Length: 187
Image (cartoon, rainbow, N blue to C red; front, side, top):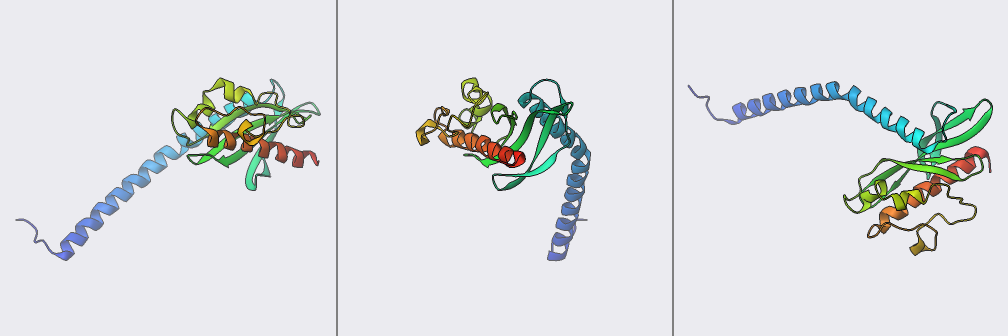
């Protein structure tokens, strides 16, 4: 015999469906939380390795404010000598947050950059991770003799074709990391 269709039966049925779906969603979160955290830690470790010179011992994460946002940095040392700093910097690109790891040597030059995460448009702004001409121009960049902004804004950075907003965000993230470096050094 079929259940009588009334408001009480519909509400009970909907409540049961919501409870089952919530339990399934909660269970999936518990199952995937650790692998996702491990994958993010591996990405962070690889990114730090990509922006620092070879060798040296890496410090634990230290808190810092980068571009007005709470962030973190790492120090690579060899004995008592500081080899470089890895500073995490986040800005807003065309599609949303653009997070970089920026390596800076003790003399203030950008050693290298690496994209940790982005939500840029595939085929356009996402080229910040694949366009070697674009991201390689930051390698060895000396902010004391060059301007860290795109050429369209009077700087020394070649923008990605059709992705000026992403290029500006990338340059700003690097610039914010350099400013944070100056804070670390006490300049």
